[in-house]
Amino acid sequence: MIMPTPVVAIVGRPNVGKSTIFNRIAGERISIVEDTPGVTRDRIYAQTEWLGRKFNLIDTGGIDIGDEPFLTQITEQAQIAIDEADAIIFVVSVKEGVTDADEKVARILYQTDKPVLLAVNKVDNPELRADVYDFYSLGFGDPIPIAGTHGIGTGDLLDKVVDTFPNDDSEDIDDSIKFSFIGRPNVGKSSLVNAILGENRVIVSNIEGTTRDAIDTKFEIEDGSEFTMIDTAGIRKRGKVYENTEKYSVLRAMRAIDRSDVVCVVLNAEEGIREQDKHVAGYAHEAGRAIIIVVNKWDTLKKDNKTMADFEAKIRQEFQYLSYAPIVFVSAKTKQRLDRLPELIQKVNKNHEQRISSAVLNDVVMDAIAHNPTPTVNGKRLRVYYATQVAVKPPTFVVFVNDPELMHFSYERFLENQIRDAFDFEGTPIHLIERKRK
Image 1 (cartoon, rainbow, N blue to C red):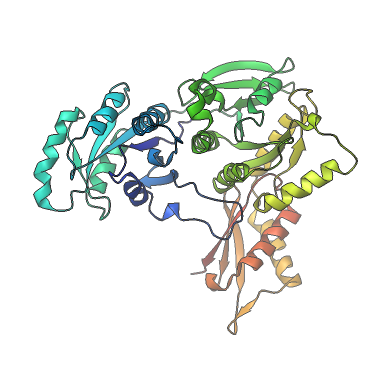
Image 2 (image 1 turned 180 degrees about the horizontal axis):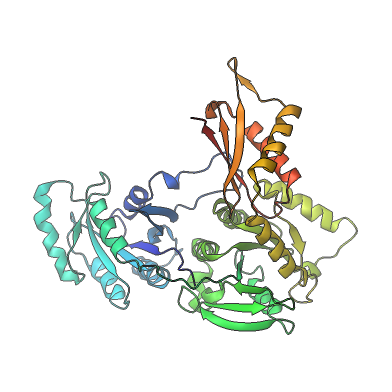
């Protein structure tokens, strides 16, 4: 089994600088994508890397626990870190010294066998370094002095974080198609899981997932194709604080997206489209996963001959960036159209890993340019020399040009549409990257 991307959580009481450290480590990767409607970054979860090791970063302080008391909030945030992370950065502040709240967090973190790195923040000048030793009393080994605002010491901290990651020497390649159902609470994800794993499926095995209480299920269909359903249902056991925390459900969805080839974004036909649906779908799109939009509870609507077309039009309007994603209307309760899902998952997965030869690709690109010549900017015309595919999952193409600045996003979209017209990329995003020919 290929090892999933490690997750690192930042915990600590308020006002110790968790978000500053989060932004410092995440760097520019956290910036908001302005020109993609509906795609928002929650600023609690970022993908980054250090010394060539990629990992996901969580700022638990950004997880709003609602009206819970101060200490309860700290407790819940620390518990989320223990549940979700592979390594934990425990942030304290040298300015206030060891506080009761720090000791409260420490007592919670004693319960985990996961590595905890103690980062003493706001050590802005050498005189403060002597005060760092007070934090040995928390019992997490050598405190690491840092200054998140200036970036001092973050390299030393990240060196120690990366040292905790396991080496992935596994050669056991799992060829099954990994997919997940994601969406906000109460859209019917669990019902869909149970319905898909009905009597007409052969369950091969249950596999421990990457979070406590998560069990992935491997099964095969009649033609022998193998699937692994990534479990996102562990939060059922966690109680109302978790269920009612929108950002926590987004966090759990992010972990599922990270491990999936195909993401089924589940909407509730009864409730229509909500803002959180767009957040979750936006993460899957940004992660470059193959996507299917699944409208569940279709049996509950009173329908006429326009209901499906109207609902589809609404989805296309609200999810403009997912124009490539097929839409399927299902009912977990009545099993309506559920038999289509495995076949559709197979299809979009195949498109997601599709390779196009350079010769065939360039025929399409040059034909497109012949029909719609490249634009001119300030008297200088964009010249496209050739294109080649450099990656799959998602299909990624490099277009070599005379000057990348001359490639307007509207012409890039035109080229993408021409590629989509020529090849079946339904269900998968495709990426175009402009490079100057050397």
